[in-house]
Amino acid sequence: MTPEDMDLLAALGRTRAGLKVEADKHYVVESRLAPLARREGYPSIEALVAALRAKREERLIWAVVEALTVNDTAFFRDRATFAFLRETALPELSRRRKDGSVRIWSAACSTGQEIYSLAIAADEARNLEPGVRFEFFASDLSERCLEKAQSGLYTQFEVQRGLPIRLLIKHFENHDETWAISPRIRQAVRWRRINLMSDLSGMGA
Image 1 (spheres, one colour):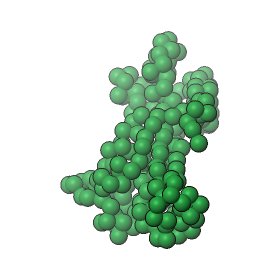
Image 2 (tube, rainbow, N blue to C red; image 1 turned 180 degrees about the horizontal axis):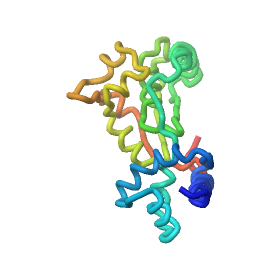
Image 3 (cartoon, rainbow, N blue to C red; image 1 turned 45 degrees about the horizontal axis):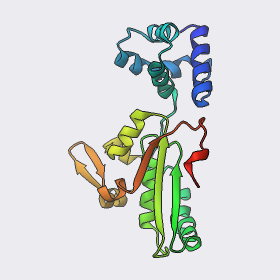
């Protein structure tokens, strides 16, 4: 790709979604856009970028921006943090919201591992006030990520990244080469496509 191509992609990422696209990291951009170019029927990334310039089609622009986002995630990514949530933070929040609800939002949920980890942590927590409800919300810019997250289906590689075997057996069911999170946990989460660059004042407290 030319420097002008990189400048265009960096500008789109910055203005549409607040992304920082490193101008000197062509290999990162190419690795993310190559699958999109194939799906859209372009013979190369250069042809994809040329179409961006020529058409200025919103659907294609957003497909490119979504492809440029970082979607790396894992279950219980920081063990110490989730242990603190389970043992200290969630019980304390439940005491402060007696007979009410505690809302937890994963603002850039990617493919769902983080919010499902939070829902499992709440399920595993002890000393919670019995009248408190935990409400889980998850959002992301990428529709493809949200579709996968809502399905609750993960590969063996994905569940091996951070998920303790005890929790895997308790909260997932094996279906051939995939693992499905339990309907009870999956249905506890509400999903929505949100661009964090947008006006969020209408989302409520």
